[in-house]
Image (cartoon, rainbow, N blue to C red):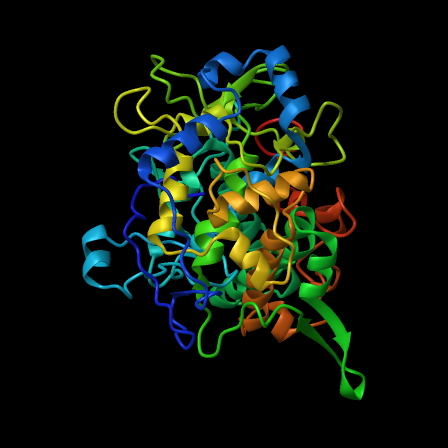
Length: 493
């Protein structure tokens, strides 16, 4: 969920035969005619704000939070909002200067490998980026200092700046600590690899741990995260393990007519600019963080850019504060979770929380819902097709939009999800998201789908029963357990 403003004036090739870093699922569809900027601002500020006229800090008292939960809450645990952001940062990143894009119409470059390979954690590896790794043990990733008073873990930092594979994973306290959990999980797997194979080399211990963590991560993405946000029938048919000739089994992609590639995986702009931005609507205005430091019933905005002096929020890019440390059983369903936890994400709908609506640029009050405006504007400048046109291409009955609503693919997918109840994507959104993730997994020669099709986490010698205590089918909570983080407080278990 990148919030930068670097994505205007981007062109992606329309050729059906283009298979570069970015491309199009629907190159045959015309671009949506769009709206003028003034109309887009009206949509963003009048239709797409949860509580118009309120700053994020004004919506943090418990009664208001309960009212917002009743109106906008989903049945998706809040931790998955930020796992979705983490996954996004693993597969897409485009830092190219705008001036380059204007001179090179095919210059939309993805600086992340479009694979679920955790390059946002491992970078280019210990040889190319040694500063990401523990200088005393090159098989392990570097971890930040832990304070003596609170046993508070943090990312490795240099003058306050996180030294990690993708700086975007320090944007807020929740995704920051999710990044930390993956660092710690890898290091524990290194220890287990050495215990399983005494005398194993440093490089082999690193590779064993990385392979296990990558495959567990891929398994969680498909079987846990996507199962929660896709329509069940679409999730089931998009990627399935089927019997094949000779008694063997193979994974079959049921949507390869929607997304397929030949020589290298490309990232469809219909996915990266529209469908996968559904996560913006899942962000709550405020969260409870932990009991020991902040306390029960104390809500804090994820961002408070409303102009308040020294705002108390969960903004990142700074050393971890005890009051912002995440108590994971308040964000994920775990055996220690007790009502009213875990907190739930917002519905997938066409509303953004006030915390995101105040990600403004310039004077406070100017173009308040800049994030929604950017997403709408980006869809136009990328030449994305209308949502209703994509629905017809997929032989899905289009939803009806009011005259004042934009037929932007991003907006259409949010409204479609809202009509489903907001607890999952609708038909078009599910098809696009399922097709891309299934295609990336099937196409990656190093994924478990291809290397060991019948592998499950239960089979892995480096994974243990205690890692899945919260979910017998393995889930995001398994990463927290594997990391050794304390689920019902802060610090280490």
